[in-house]
Image 1 (cartoon, rainbow, N blue to C red):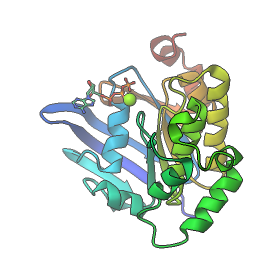
Image 2: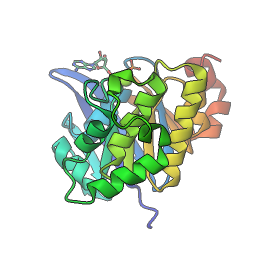
Image 3: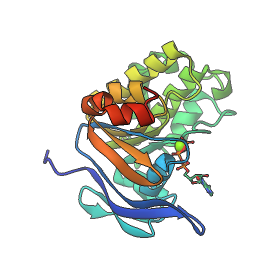
Length: 237
Ligand SMILES: Nc1ncnc2c1ncn2[C@@H]1O[C@H](COP(=O)(O)OP(=O)(O)OP(=O)(O)O)[C@@H](O)[C@H]1O
Ligand SMILES: [Mg+2]
C-alpha cells in the first residue's frame, strides 16, 4: 500500500446555507491510521465528517479519497467508493432488529451480504446473540457497536466516526474505544471525532484540534496530549 493519504481535505470551506463553518480546513488520514479530531462544541468537527461524506458540498478547497476528488459526491456514491460513516446521533434504526439494521447497511452491496454479515457476527458476538432484538432494546454501548457494524457491512477502508463515546458510562466507553481499535487493526483507517479528547487521543496515532472551523494544532497524539497549550485550552488541564 502506498503512503499517500487515503483521505485529504485541503483548504476546505463548508457550512450550512449562508453560514460558513469550516474555514480553510486542511487535514489528512494515512492508511491504517486512527486520527482524532477534537475541539470545543460548535468548532465544526461534525461538519468535517459531513463534508467528507457528501452531506455537505465544500464551498472551496478539495476533498480527495485515494487522490481522487470526491467533494460534493452524493453520500450513496461515497459509500460505494469505500468510506463508511457513523453519525453522532440516530446512527441505527431503533424499530428494526439488529439483523435488519445490518442488512440495511448493505443495500448498496453487489453481493456477498450474507458472508459479510456472518463475519460481523463472528467479530461481534454480542450482535450475534441479539440478531432478532430491536435496536431500541440494546444498551447504549451495544447500539454503538451495531452502528459500527452497520457501517462495516460495506467493507470500507475509511471509517468516519462521530463521538463514539457520547453518553456512555466510562467502562462502556472504554469497550467502545476497544472496538474502534479492533476495527482499525483490520486495515480500516479511522477519522474519529471525540469529545473525550484524552481517551480519543489515547487510542489515536495523530490528532487535530479544530476551533472555529480551522485547524489550530496538529501532530502525533502523544505530543498533543503533552502540549501545555492544547492541554490548557482544550483538555481541561
Ligand atoms: N444542520 C445545521 N444547520 C445549521 N447550522 C448547523 C447545522 N449543524 C450544525 N450547525 C452549526 O455549525 C456549527 C458547527 O457545528 P458542528 O456540528 O460541526 O460542531 P461540532 O464541533 O461537531 O460540535 P459538537 O461538539 O457540539 O458536536 C455550529 O455553530 C452549529 O450550530
Ligand atoms: Mg459534533
